[in-house]
Length: 280
Ligand SMILES: NC(=O)c1ccc[n+]([C@@H]2O[C@H](COP(=O)([O-])OP(=O)(O)OC[C@H]3O[C@@H](n4cnc5c(N)ncnc54)[C@H](OP(=O)(O)O)[C@@H]3O)[C@@H](O)[C@H]2O)c1
Image 1 (tube, rainbow, N blue to C red):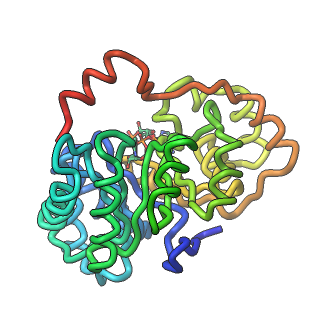
Image 2 (cartoon, rainbow, N blue to C red; image 1 turned 45 degrees about the horizontal axis):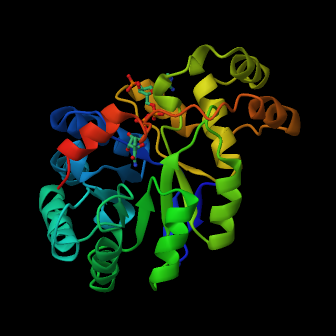
């Protein structure tokens, strides 16, 4: 599946390009390459401090704005959730050099999420973003938001990879009409993913790389992906996943890899400290 219709009817590519942990300058270079290679969805965030680089690359690419799907994210607002959320998107748009984004995500389920969501609904109605969604929301938090508001998030961007497969959430999101988008689809290269014997054997069987197998597996499960790479050869490799199909045996083998291993643990006291230091 190369693209998908979100729950408000807008079209979104199933494969995009992420720029987490890339400097603003390097982002400009990487995004320009990614756009030349054919990526049409870019995933940034206010907290990545590289929205300006994304904006410069979009401009330099010469590609019409409407052909590029731009996602950015609202960082945690400690106070004045409604007003500050509106200002946060204006600031992001200014850094991106754009009049609107295609998808605005609440980055974390923290702060006054209800005020933040009301502001996001109003930003959507005002045409500042073509869709709104959330990120890092577990099922109970998503239900809370859906129960209390009028607009159902179009997307929930959450960590999803072979070591944290989230089978139950995929079914849950499908039932609610919320698209699951995987961050860390390649587990950020952690947990020995590229040398994993099961993934390596499946890759050899199909004449593909481990990265391609993992990304194809996510795509076949209906999960959108935004792999990050600053290397052109890998950018090309990560989009080239439609010339083969994983079979039931491959799926059964990959299922055995699930260990609920996560990259960012919000229950880790060091993580809590980091988040507190980076509140809006
Ligand atoms: N919402 C959130 O809270 C959240 C959190 C994290 C990430 N994200 C988003 O999700 C995007 C993707 O996640 P991520 O960047 O954390 O991790 P990722 O895409 O799973 O992995 C990126 C790592 O894999 C390497 N890599 C990429 N393609 C490869 C290939 N074909 N072969 C071997 N190595 C490869 C990259 O190295 P090189 O660059 O050196 O190639 C980089 O070290 C982010 O960029 C960001 O946009 C969102």
